[in-house]
Length: 194
Image (cartoon, rainbow, N blue to C red; front, side, top):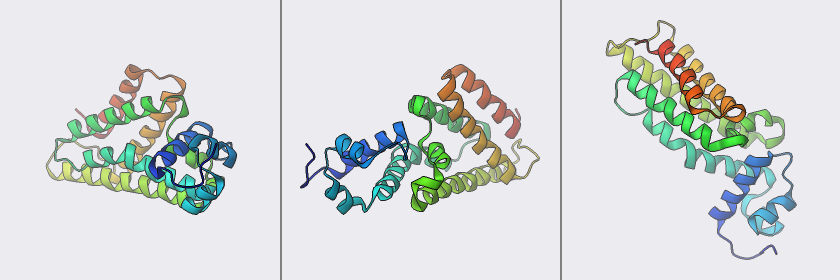
């Protein structure tokens, strides 16, 4: 039975996030959310404002819990190949962890007309942040004299972002770490030649 009083907001958010992630925004009803979280309709509305507000909070929770470590990795002062290899390995690990549901952010963009502007903006901001951080990594490596593609850093960063999305898709259809590792190696060799 749904509770209308106190509840653990973080636990309810995690359960809602997992349900949205598994089913998608459009296929998740408010009744489904009430059942998954054990929280009554009015309490969900009082806390999150709307289904779209709950979804946006779930997206932010995913960003904080799953992606911040990867952003932190891009701030480390390591040789380019070592840094990108570690980064792509983390991407592979995360995508395999996501399993058949795929990347929550990629799924959100597939449903962008339905999920609300706040969630779409968070995903776009996260992608822009990756692009900026990857550009910085490439420019710093270039300034240190490391082997870096001759392509503009922004193009190489976007290529790496697309590689991340490709790895997400590959993890859904053929979750094979070795195959994913080979794809990542091609991207690494293209951006930071050995």
